[in-house]
Length: 205
Image (cartoon, rainbow, N blue to C red; front, side, top):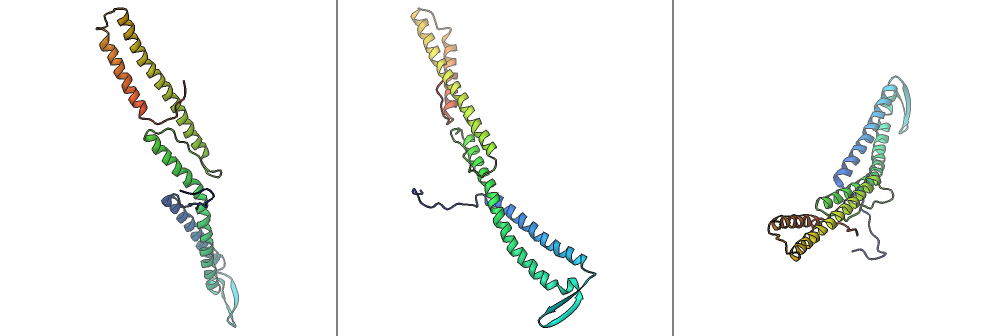
């Protein structure tokens, strides 16, 4: 448990599979783009000559061949440095998506288990806030309807018992009605059991 004021390390790798897949894809795009640039440059400069002064030697030759080592060195630097920047940027961007996906999945699992009391709270820069609000709205609306059903179900039990009492007080023969009334009470108990299997915020009706 974190104490008040204690530094809490932020976990950017919330969904390793999801984030890792996108990081690899964007890194691959950057690497392919770098190699493609080198190929295009070599193609358009294949008919040109360049002069290179390297290690006290003056060289003259076709541009791609003369500059191949330099271009290759620069490309590797770009792939390593640029790839690192792409990885970090993708990690931060996917964190804004992976976080809400994780919370949605946890909330939906709770809903499947019958818990409607939870709320999805997203960070200010997270994506899919509208979806989170819709899920919260659904849970709240369903909780209100379950409260109404619970209240109506409780009234049914009260009315049946009151009807039995009134019929007995009036010396009426309830033997022909009792099986039906008992069946109503049994159905009422089943409904109550089903409602109690859910965890939700009960509203006063």
